[in-house]
Length: 182
Image (cartoon, rainbow, N blue to C red; front, side):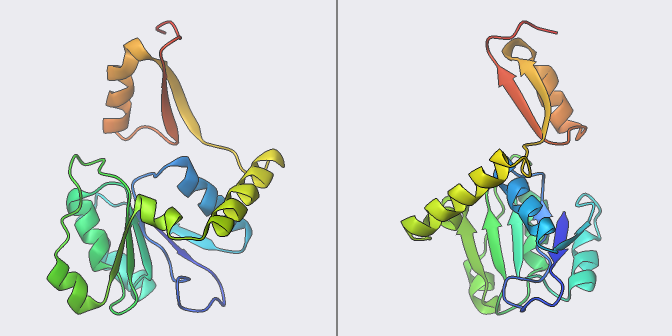
């Protein structure tokens, strides 16, 4: 889990943002842009049972939590959100199950829940285009690069999956049908 805090930033959306899992390249790209804008990042090992308490203590309650793991890890991420302002972005279930959402708790705490498509598509088309153009400019300038851990032949998918399950990867794991096995 990662939490970010921008120095001297207004509170809405600028408190540390816990993230579970490693997220897609888009998340890493956004994080890279944020770091260059002065955002500090702190990592929390999300497999520790006391992780939610550690995050709450460090952040005072997060405005945004992004969850790619689901299950118990996602449920823990929900608990770190600040009442009345917390936003939970769910975009994956690496644990094998989605985070269970209790609408009564969400409503009582004043939280906002957004799925992966809602994060991008609630913006007007012009804003989406501007975001995409900015990302492409950063990529072309060499300031934004995807993290690729390994490229595996499709026949080696089981080994690639084992690396993911063992949490030995940093970055994307790609499968290519045309490669011969290593």
